[in-house]
Length: 451
Image (cartoon, rainbow, N blue to C red; front, top):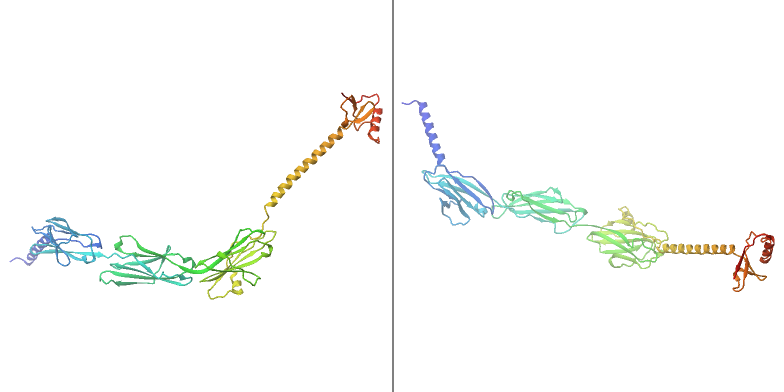
């Protein structure tokens, strides 16, 4: 009789040989995950087939392939590889109903099997945003909902306004009617301002089936806000006697459609012209004053002022832009006074400026002055020349001036300068000549003979 310890050792060795034998004949598989619409590959391997064939079956226990023989007529299922040690098949265009446990079997004694779990991911649909269909008034709270269906497992949603992340107010997950996929909804709330008009709000869905790609939807917000207005003159620098147009430029959402012109100190409103333009056909000094434009939209009214000073000296009038009033607030002096604390529009000059024609007059005057100066200078030179060259001519005892010389006969002219002796005290020209001739006796006279 063998000792008890030896019996236990023999039993362990036999069990080890039995386990080794089962491991070599046991088929092996792996779980697979596939996106709906994709292709999944199922591989079954065995080390010792023991002259037996491998077989694949679907979750409904329908045989797909037995060795290399097709058992189920489904063109989506194809044989990839068939050897005594391996049987590999593929399933294309996977749908959600393909999910489940697939079985690989080898028909030995006894039959050995291995399971492969196929998980099909449901791809979420493009998200949709609700709640932006109607414009939102300024300072009100926007409530938006983002929804995406068809995800498996349930997807995650996140919000963004411009480049800023928004925190959601809660997420809701509901199972779809097919019992396999889910619909996810997310809500977000935030207060809108004037700057949020035309702002882009984006809802993005995150899911493992998207494989690091992004699926999102973007919508633009429409925010109604109070109007603003400013007055622009055309031309910018008007002059007395010219045509002037004052343009009341109203901005807002919606854009103001009603405009009323008034002049401070005048009871009657001014006539309204097209495109909110106040026209002065012929500008004069009586048009000076402060003009008020009231622009109105469904969100309220705004008052803009413009100081027009038609004078000889240019001045800088300051247009004032006033804050808006609500739709129910009447136009009153009190509201206009309160509005004056808002930011003013750019300062513009509506005063007359000097005419460019004065420049031309100055140029012409300068030219005339130069011409007159040249003429006077010429006259002075000519007078000086004539004075320096005056003299007397004597012909046969006659005394004649040099400017009336007779052409025939011989004429002797004697020229005496002012320095000639006795010329200064003589009462007339003849006496001066006689005195000069007497004083210059014995001297050489300056004489000319004309033939």
